[in-house]
Amino acid sequence: MICDPVTAAHWRVSIVQKRIIYFQDEGSLTKRMCERESPFGEVTEKPVMECCACGTAKYRVTFYGNWSETIHPKDYPSE
Image: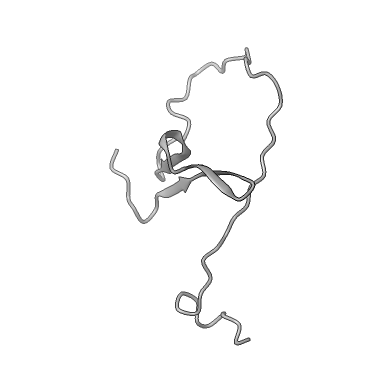
């Protein structure tokens, strides 16, 4: 499938511990999602009822924005 770069979402993940980057933008830590493409692959008609995930996972998500005077001059604070 040809993916329109305007409507595609690109996810890049970094795994950071104590301000040191351990993994960044490698293999499955990057994902491109197209507008008409399922991020989970082909959908099966009958869902799989057996779950083999064990244990607990904790996630903390932090989003950083690039907010500068050149990108958003109208909304950028003067002081």
